[in-house]
Image (tube, rainbow, N blue to C red; front, top):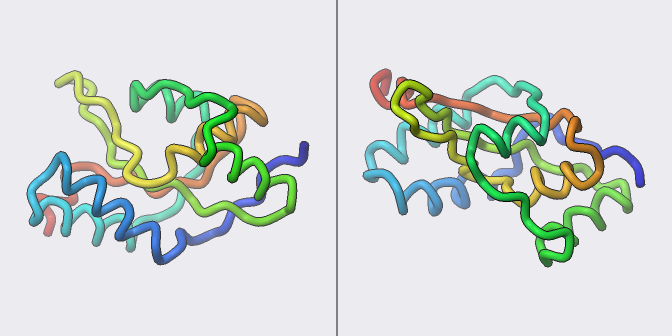
Length: 130
């Protein structure tokens, strides 16, 4: 299977999806600040295996419907959207959070765990700056 093709910018619908998830674990003002920072943040590349390790999330099964859908997109040559991540806090034992793109990370891992994935990563310091 071909390597995934990635978009340079997240899809617009990724931000509300990220906000929906973050609203489960953070107050509305924190969510608003994080989403604003994710919208304006720089895109960097991180390996699929490192993203999963930093988030402490399990690798989803290869037959998960959303993972299958993303693998189909890769086979069809359709570009995937960058992943949106909130940085964890190592000294406090808080893992990073994939605000949007968990399935894309898992699909990429199945292709090659060393796949470089475009990400927008922001820390909680974005809340203090807002």
